[in-house]
Length: 176
Ligand code: AMP
Image 1 (spheres, protein in one colour):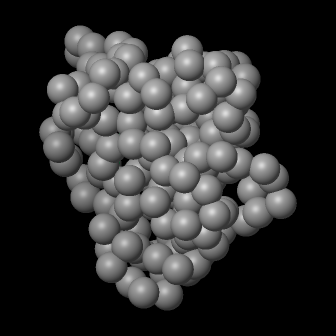
Image 2 (image 1 turned 180 degrees about the horizontal axis):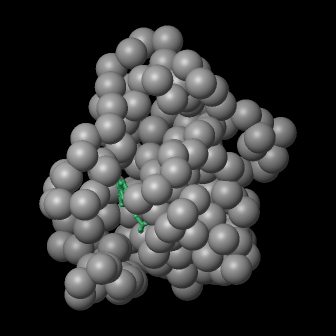
């Protein structure tokens, strides 16, 4: 884990002043680091029946696609608004200022299918909770959520747990 953590690049004041951006591209670019991260993300779910990984745009696509391949299940993209070509359902969620919206194809998950949510990082949990609402709207069962990075001070893992979803995180960074 400490090895993987050293592969994350921390960029102060990006995308705006006061934010410490945790950049996973340096982990993705490291062959052994990427392989280890995918193995560790998938590990708790290897023996659990899962129909699909739902990956959140955009870094959740890279990680989620590889996790889905490893688990031998399908992949469902959860995208920013207006990007998906077929009929969608959407969910608004709060940002620091204003709101945003994520969308999923309405037929991407069938009634009773078991779904694992994957993203690179959980901060406030707003994005992952919105993803969970979309999956539950089409009557999918959420098996859990997997993230490379947790920012515990922002409370996302607890908020997601309060929404009934347990998280598996590979590392944590204190602060924002
Ligand atoms: P949240 O909805 O607050 O849990 O934010 C999670 C989403 O925002 C994820 O898709 C992350 O990629 C992105 N994100 C939030 N904060 C950071 C940060 N400090 N560094 C990198 N990505 C972040």
